Amino acid sequence: MRKNIKRGAILSALVVVAFFLVYLALLATAILEAPQDVIGWLAVVLAGGIFVAMIVGVVLALSQRLKEIDKGEEEDAKKY
Image (cartoon, rainbow, N blue to C red):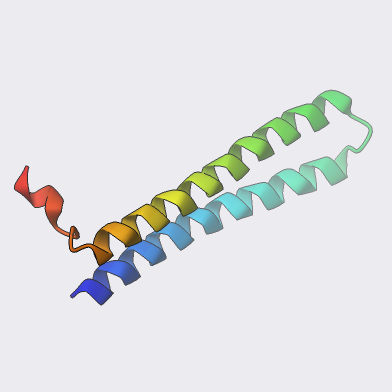
């Protein structure tokens, strides 16, 4: 049972990170389309930084969740 819960947590985190990476790739193509547009670059870099921060947050949350599962807290939320 614990292995399935871990697999689900990892799979959901990978799907979210994949969506963020696709969005980052789209942002990169926007930079390549108009390389001389300074305001566009700033907007794309800012948005890209936000998505990189969200990817880091998802990875950190996944590592915390895996530690919780290892400690046996996989269904701890059902108490409440």
